[in-house]
Structures are given as structure tokens and as C-alpha cells.
Length: 366
Image 1 (cartoon, rainbow, N blue to C red):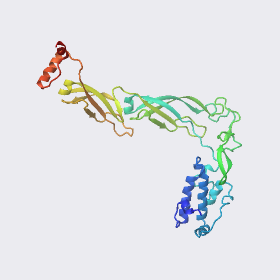
Image 2 (cartoon, rainbow, N blue to C red):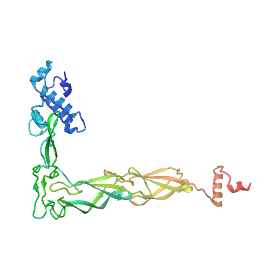
Image 3 (cartoon, rainbow, N blue to C red):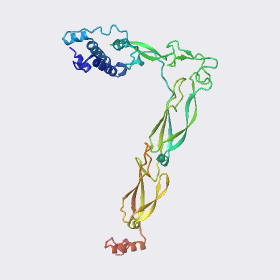
Image 4 (cartoon, rainbow, N blue to C red):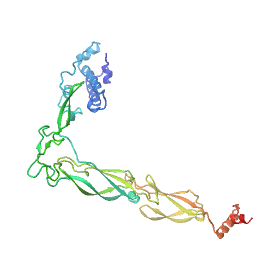
């Protein structure tokens, strides 16, 4: 015998309200329309409905608890469609409040305009602080000749005789649950809900024409290559009575030879001479969005030393502050010396009691 309590996931002491609430939740999760790729969805839903049919009826539940055998071969035979079955459980029309109302009644097909994708290139400096870009792209808009109706001058669209203006028709198919009613786009009006006998000569009944559009878009600080901005309602116009599509802006950030980006921080590699590293110096360091700044290189700076300049990096996408500018100091070791430079350096080595190799010219004279 099937364990209906286990099927519904309730205890044997569960009351009517808990059983009904649990069934509602499980029915939403297992409904065949919500699981189109699951071949077992209908069988699972039927099993849940069977368990609910028993446990929600006090007399059937009492017989079940006593261990009596119950026959449910005709459980769904009295229902013309799944909609009738749901109404029998919950009341109301078309599964109202159940979560599947849109699937069981004729309803105008909800359409919107076309989503569009455009590309915007910015420099690293622009990406650091944000910038406004003027973008030009092609986009559908309402046909000016017919005002978006799609019909020729002096005529008007007519309500589709097949779907009666709903844009969809109900189709019955037999399933394990009996006859199930589903909706499909009306093939006579292609989901519009209306037909046009005399199309507009400009848009040929499409209601829309394509033209060039210019839009100023704010690129926020902190964007990186691959960032995609979504501007709701700024895409292609939709058919009359529907909202426009969305505009997606794909951002590409051009590299800057002066910096390496690391998230919201910027790295700059600075080279100083040996004497500058030993004795200290002041150098000019580029800043991404401003004039160069002066950096103090302290005496005794070692190769690879990193100096942090706060809040001079990339702006953060959340608008809260900026990253830092990280300056990595490299000591430039000369590879070729003049005779005077070598002599001076050897004098320094003597003072430091260092023992550098002999000069190549002296080794050659031996």
C-alpha cells in the first residue's frame, strides 16, 4: 500500500490545513507545465494528487488509516481538464491563487520590443572616474506612416476571428491526468490578437520601422572590459500597447601603457638609478585622472619596494571611494659604464670594502 503521508511529506497527525498547504506547494513544484523536460512529472503529480484526494477527505483518510484498500482508477475521469481538477481542489477559476492561472485561460500574448546590444569603448582614465558616451545604433521604432497600427491609411486592424483577440488558442491533449488544456500562439495572427487586411505600405504591416538612434549613456566609474549595462526600456519599440525592449551596453576598456589594472587598484612600475635608490630622490608619478604627483623615494630604497598612494586608482562600481595607486620601484642597474664611471664605482667599492671583479680591459691585458 502506498504511504500517502510520506508522498506528501506530512506526519500522520497533520491537520487539514497543513495537508492542503503542503499539497499546494508540491503541486507547484511538480506540475507538468513547470517541468517540461521531466518525463515523470505527470506521474509524480498524479501520485501527489491521489495522496491529497485521500488525506483531505476525512472518510477516505479514516479508511486508509485502518488499512482498507481504496480504488482510484477513475480518480481523474470526472475532470475534463487539469484546470477542472485544480478547481475541484481549490475552487476559483483557472487555478486562481494557485500559481498556474496564466496556463489555463486565453490571455493576450504579452510581447515587448526587441532587446538590443551595442558596444562602447572607453579609455582606462574614463573608466576610472566614469564618463558619458554618445552611442549611435539602429533600433526599431513605431512606424510614423500608420502610427504603429500596421494598417494602411483609412483602415484599421481587425480582431482575429480565430483567437478572438487573445493572441493564443487553447489546445487539448490527452495525458495521464486526462485531457489537459494548454495554450499556443495563434497561427492566424501570430499572437497579435488582430489581423490586418490592408497593410501599411511603409512598414508592410509590421507596425515598426528601423532607423538610426542616438543616446547618451552614463558609463559608471569602475567598469572593466566585459561589463554589461542594462538600460530598461531603451531598446527597440514594441508593437502598439507593449513596452520597449531593453538596451544592453557592452563595455570595452582600452589598455593604458602606464598602468596595470588589478581590480580597483592600479600598478605603475617606476625605475630609479642606483645613486637615487641609495641616496633618495623625488620623482614624478603619473596619475590616471590628474596631473602627475611627486613621490618621495627614501634613501636606501630596495629593488621591488612598493609604495601605496591611496585613492588614486579606479573608482568603485558601488560609488564608495576609489582603489589605490601602487608604485613598484625598480633599481636600474647599468650594463655599460664609461671609464670614469667605472673608476668612480671602484673607488666607492674600496670605501665599502667590497671586492668587485676586475675590469674586462685589465683581464684582457694579462
